[in-house]
Amino acid sequence: MSIVAVGINHKTAPVAVREKISFNPDQLSMALQEMLQHVQCKEAAILSTCNRTELYLVQDGDVALTKERIIRWLEQHHNVPASTIGPSLYWHNDHKAVNHMMRVACGLDSLVLGEPQILGQMKQAYSQAKAAGSMALVMDRLFQRTFGVAKQVRTETEIGTSAVSVAFASVNLAKHIFANIEKAKVLLVGAGETIELVAKHLYENKVEKITVANRTLSRAEGMAKQIGADVITLAQIPERMADADIVISSTGSTLPIIGKGMVEQALRKRKHRPIFMVDLAVPRDIEAQVSDLDDVFLYTVDDLQSIIAKNLDKRRKAAVQAESIVSKQTDGFMAWLRGLNTQDTVISYRNQCMAERDLLLEKALLQLSADKSPEAVVAELATKLTNKFMHAPTSAIQTAAQGGELDKIVYLREIFDLDQSK
Image 1 (tube, rainbow, N blue to C red):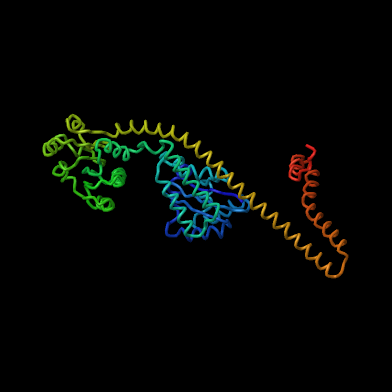
Image 2: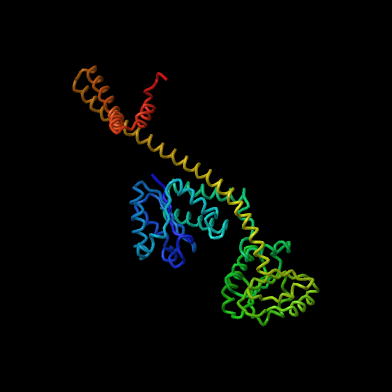
């Protein structure tokens, strides 16, 4: 029995290739059943995100043959040539497969080091495999151990505590300035990807009042609906600025949208209650002179980049600790797996011996019922049992001797305790 992890990610393929073999969540159950059948594995799970698609499986067959079946199945399932898929795939077996899964769950293999979203995606993959009936003892235990490792890494290291994106850093700074950020009123200017990420972080921090200002209302409305925000036009910013405790802007404008005079007017209406402002745009959305105002805390994208650089260094140091934890936990899981294999071997060997005993005993009883001498029957039974149990070890010793495999002979002598004089 072996564990295999095969996948494609942001390191091995561009998005144009990754999207070709991603799995629709609505069709994942069917895909898992297909995988069990076509790849001929015992257990299976699929992790599919924007940055990676990975297949995890437990199988008894030849690994090389399993690889062929996986590529063939991916080719058929996604209708993509094997020549497109094959070069981008990475493969891990047993110890390396377990280690890889744990590293993924801890964010050690992510585009953004230590990002926490991947753990939730791993848990979703686990739930989907459980629901599809494609998971049994080994895969279930592996996922549970993986979740435990990720929790340990989050608890014992600082890999996820520092902001490493401008969106996250913006919200993190706001949390340091406002003791109860959920009560703060926020004005977001723009509706692009960066502002969407900022909005997501604010929503996760339970900020109750968010307003989105954008040149095109339809673009802003889609995002605002997801977080329960209000939507205004850019022209309405001057009249709404006074309500904002936090202003974060990121547009594609070539000229500043928020000027010093606009902010001064807002501060007067606010009776000089401070405003925290973050300009994530290049060129700037907020005039540089705004930073001269006493009641404004203005940060630019350059200010945040220096913070992010320091935080990334912290995460890299924390990653060293995390790798050590993952390594120990990988060894622990593999020890459990070896014990499981040993148990299976013992049970199989015992069942085989019992079956042979029962067969010979049945023949002996028939001989006794035919009035054959009990002494002769017992002697014959003892001889046949001895020969049966000696046959496989004797053959193994002879084969090892013929092949000059002295280490196997030494091992067999230890198993059968042939050196009792020691």
